Image 1 (cartoon, rainbow, N blue to C red):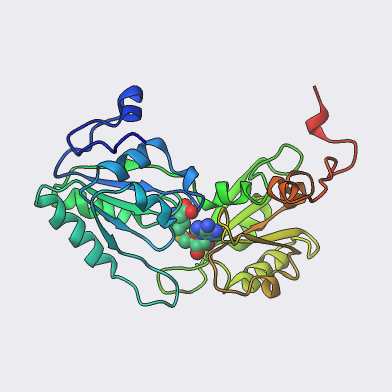
Image 2 (cartoon, rainbow, N blue to C red):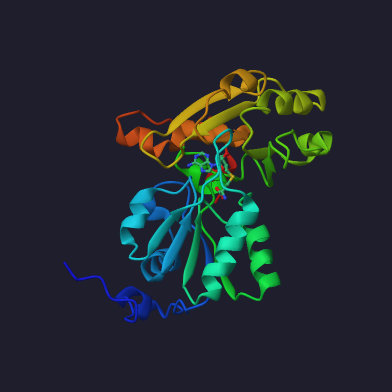
Length: 284
Ligand code: SAH
């Protein structure tokens, strides 16, 4: 096995791709992807290998940390679990960078999708600390792909909306649910287990059908992934549980019948015509 390079050496892949060096005194805010460690970006892996210190959150797969040679600090947040204060995390990032460390803030999914990456980056900007953002595969797209559900599909939805089911106080956000119901054929909900029933009720009150398909994808792209396919009317009951879950509402959920590639690997038979014979996807 090739020995891991030292801090002042460039990793062969980083060199081949011309990746930027991780400079001292910088903070990189990177996404780790939804679960499967293979879904981290090359730039994200390069950052993990180069960092002097990594503040990682609860949603990342810790196998990724095997690549690290720096100090590891857990800075996680999970609903209902004692967690680090946001201001403490931002302050730690600033103070480590000011000591001249290469600081990596590693977050689940994408740091700018319901990940407070913007808040942390603004704190860095205010403190005059230079930073780079390394996007990641969000659970709202990659997690659904691991459930065999394309986030868009020509036969079902020309638009998709990402929604959080949770505002800063844990309440259902004050959104225009009637407009979302009418304007967005597919809704992808983060942190929405608790308020899923209320969201479904809002959408149905605005005209969405109770038999519209929905899915609750828990621990997406992880070993324990589970997918519950349900309907809008039943969504509140189906959304119980504590594992992180993405909820998707829309006709695109039906594609899972034909595209559950993980299920197929375990012997499940796929139905490659989930909408019958006449579908747009057949048009040349
Ligand atoms: N920045 C992250 C989202 C952070 S908010 C991203 O882009 O994916 C935390 C919420 O993300 C969780 O409550 C859950 O709704 C969702 N989530 C993150 N990882 C997940 C996973 N592996 N499976 C299911 N949901 C996940």
